Picture 1 (cartoon, one colour):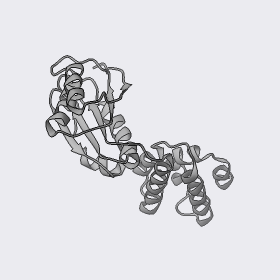
Picture 2 (cartoon, rainbow, N blue to C red):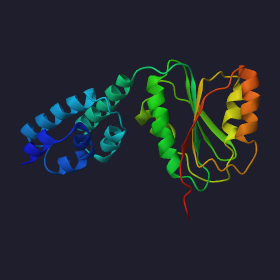
Picture 3 (cartoon, helix red, strand yellow):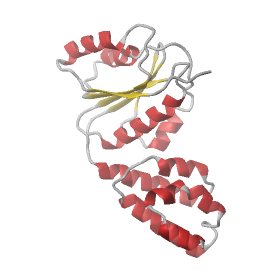
Picture 4 (cartoon, rainbow, N blue to C red):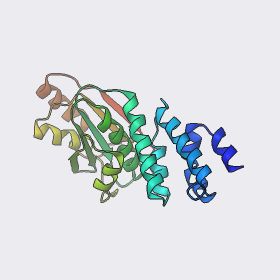
Length: 214
């Protein structure tokens, strides 16, 4: 019955239900394990890329299956193709935005494997926590950002100001936030200064997240 279930699952369903399949014996029964690994090969070829594989890997105990799931995710990301230039990911870690920390990791993890230049990840409240994550895997980014906690006010501009101070040229900005700034420097002001420095207006993409109620 479990074998038939595995064979009929889509790549996304297979990855999403990894923990359940582990409980049903996929790592102990050779036939089930073989069918599962064959399904992972199909998932790796899928054009639909998500971070479900990495999140599933975190939930299971079998180290070999964990490694296969992470490898599946890396192959999926590689299939998207390249993105030109260098990018800055600004992740809101102010007091009301704890969920954006994980979303920022996911966006940064995708860009880190796709861009032709550098990738910077900056978590901000009223001060920046900046790091370069060029070429890092999602798993590496999680380890590097484990200490990030939500607290404080909100200044989106402080992250871009940090890049300006470093005199780094970037070609795209991804902001993960509710966009409710309440502390300077404000993004619009820093953006004007950065545009003058870079001699171009860098595209900005906002992933708007809802403010969390406490």
